[in-house]
Length: 138
Length: 324
Ligand code: SF4
Ligand code: SF4
Ligand code: FES
Image (cartoon, rainbow over all chains, first blue to last red):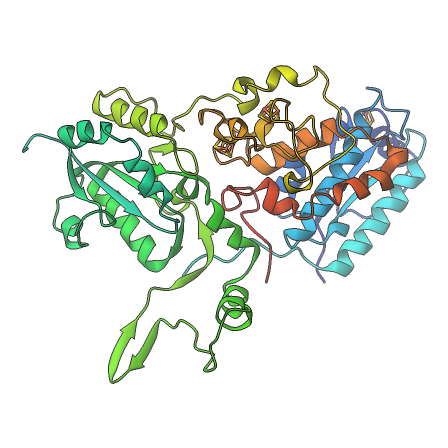
């Protein structure tokens, strides 16, 4: 069976802390998710998301603080707008928009990290592997 | 004549505008002709492939290649020119970034043939004839170059030394490149021969752009009469100025139209479309509670890929649509 590769960008102040909490609480969840810590979800430049897909990720998960809780006030507002724009672009580029997911997860929501990672992994498994780069000439 | 350097001009998948751009340097073309020997320029004069093949390697000081690469013939020709030239200049947006023909990377070869030779309303093709690499007609063997499944920028096919940006490159950019070549003043290899600054930084309308630009609406140029004296982005028109390098003389802006991005990205940007997407996300003034409202406003941009990558799809990170 195809094991999906998922790249997760989690913000330092909320979602990454929650993932830590999930860890120390010994919750187990899908090992398909590779977490990258960023200072704020607003740091997740669209280039990082697209680069992740290009390098072989089957899904990209972005986790940030709930609206109103961002450590940098409104970094996550920008994240949401980018996310909406990116999804529109992805569908035109032959990448199912569901392969990109944004979740607000606060520092205390270790359980939500577990649930979202499991859910998302199953969803991506259902979609199958991402189509690789367009065919070469010749 | 003997010690004048030899140059070549060639075109691939392009519209012909870049050939015009060479002629557009007007009377200065005479100075150029004075200074170089043109050893290959099939669009303008009767040259054949043998005129390149018969030359020793590195014979041409420089070849100027416009157009993207889509067929096996184009690939062969640019590989031949690469061998015979000391320097290769990618001339114009299509060669530099893939250009408008590069938007075809949103479709497969089969989809394109199907539409162009079968379904388009103006096509009459009862025999459903499609271009074939090999066919017979009245006892003769006919051969056509292979039409590749995607469009390439020149540097995806051969190493490129310099880039002359623009659709088409304006005369001063072309002249500066030629002068730099002839006077031995070219910058480091790999350079795009226009300033590495955003178009906004030289735009005459920049001073009308508020310090912190926020917009609540997106509009399309045909929907209203834009104020030609006011930053277009401020008016809700998707102007590519923030994500496009300068050097064109702000041609479109001065003609009352927003920039469409033909000069391509700045040096540090991996992907012009995504730089613009990021810039847009910063200025669209919507809170998370106004998500639906934002979705509605984005309806005014029905073709994000075609808008953000109008000239740069093949050279973007994804290079085109993913398909099986
Ligand atoms: S957004 Fe367009 S119109 Fe506004 S300053 Fe930049 S280039 Fe000029
Ligand atoms: S304004 Fe933009 S689209 Fe127009 S020539 Fe300049 S770079 Fe190209
Ligand atoms: S710090 Fe968590 S989203 Fe900005």
